[in-house]
Length: 531
Image (cartoon, rainbow, N blue to C red; front, side, top):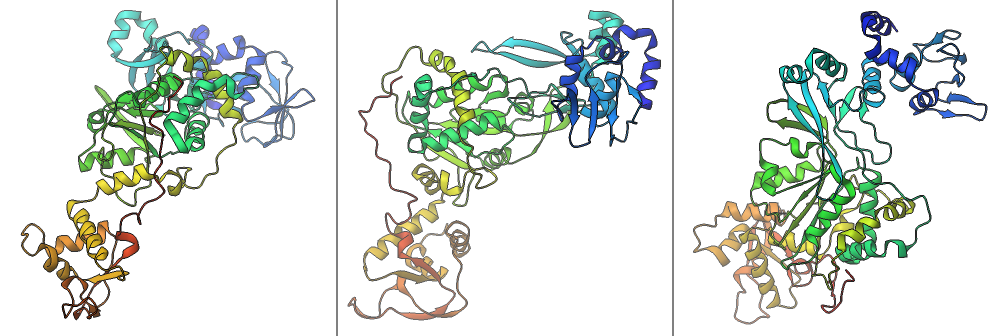
């Protein structure tokens, strides 16, 4: 506790603003118990019990100090010695970290209304404003040291220096929010809603459930699992949810608005170009990022989007502020009127979940008002819902989120040559019903279909076969040259033969209807949605 004694002596003349003295003399015992009981529990004997360290602290305060009893196992504490509340807070809650304890007291017990903070050696003013849905959001505005001194005087600058943090951190939690984590200022903000402490029926959230059915369709249960994870486990990695439709009034943007109402300041909405900009502070502190009406057509932009949902750290670049790195747990929700070509998605991609929405039926003018009223009920409903099985690092298995919409996007993302080879191969196979597979070398393909096309080279064909079709050639061997016809004019005569490194194209893959993930979902165009 050497650091404690040093600070206490150094701040003797300013005891009224000393966080240590403040905590020891002005924080109520019940509040102290709540502070140090994060990793402990209160037993039936009236003791605050840390079962992991076998430490017992009597609740009753004796002359401003608490005495350790039982068998101590904490390196910084000695049995029989009396300790102040701040010393116990430092030992138990922050593992002996003095600065983290100091920051916690400043942020949670004193000067909570003081608008200025100091992070490392930069100064900020905390500003609150309401968003379009009436939810309070916190903004950090960079301030110069001289400006604070000018506005608040030297005492104001000293007061700001006391609210000092080691840096920024991103630690999302919608149930047990902490403004300060180990001395770092938490960029995540408090969840704006509270669960309802009562039994919830489907009738209580009928409007919300109807909206979820509209968005997630036949994957409705999967959609509820997705919403439960967003709320209960904001650190969990999830696939990129993409809502597409070429029609108007389908609810794509409405879903983003609902997420904004639900998660408040921890949601950020961008346009695709924002993801490629030099500055990212406007979404670095967000847990959910919405990208409305997006079209991502550049290769480096596609890679930026995909890496955003799998990165666990983010370098934050803000104007006039030194860059810093924080943990990052961002989830991405995109909307687009480009149904199949909003982005290139390769055949192996497992990070996208695409939902194609149909237009609303009858639209209720109180649409968002009703959804907002049901939020406390919906949170309780999600809380009581069984946790989904984790089948991958993104919870859902590739098979769970692979649907016809995603396959359409993957098909559209193929190169023109890949699509052309598939079409030609399908037509060739349909001419011979008995042909189960086709053998052809790169040269066979070129000579049969692209001999007069100077833009298509043998190397380009080989690249498409390997990277897009994922085909590998055999070792040099004897084979039938299917693409170059038979030795005679009759269909019963054999194919020409040769030796080479040929590829095998199976009928089951290249004929129509053989390469779909599931049967198409047929929905009634006359069906009305009750909102």
